[in-house]
Length: 185
Image (tube, rainbow, N blue to C red; front, side, top):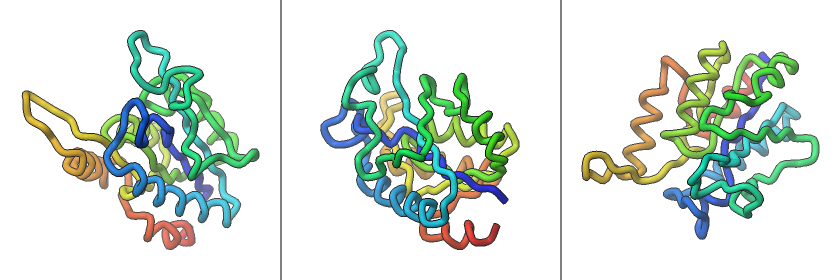
């Protein structure tokens, strides 16, 4: 089965000193780098999703800022595809689906940032479009949220979204299991 890696929004604004720092992005990008290395070794398709926020009042991923740059630890090679998006869903108003169809991709390995937003919407749309999805839980992260004056720690947010995607929308695994999953094609 043709498989592609989708790295969603692993951009500078989510790291230390960025405009929207997440919790432990360094740990997540290290796992994303492991997945990237495996895909490069196997010469499988790699697609980077880069969010540029064009909404009025946006506070991060601003056009022409350092914050929109893909993090240096997983920086794309010249042959690797970068798709720009302006909304949380990586498929919405982008060329992603058409690009994947042209490559006859049936299965996606997805990782990136933020678990509760762009990862969630991208995984759900991927499933709706008919892709088999492997979601790398340890290569994703998010931030603390609040609801009705209650702080919800990032780890709980992340675990809740991984649990809600598991089964119906994706097979949620850790990066340690990825090589087995890729070789089991």
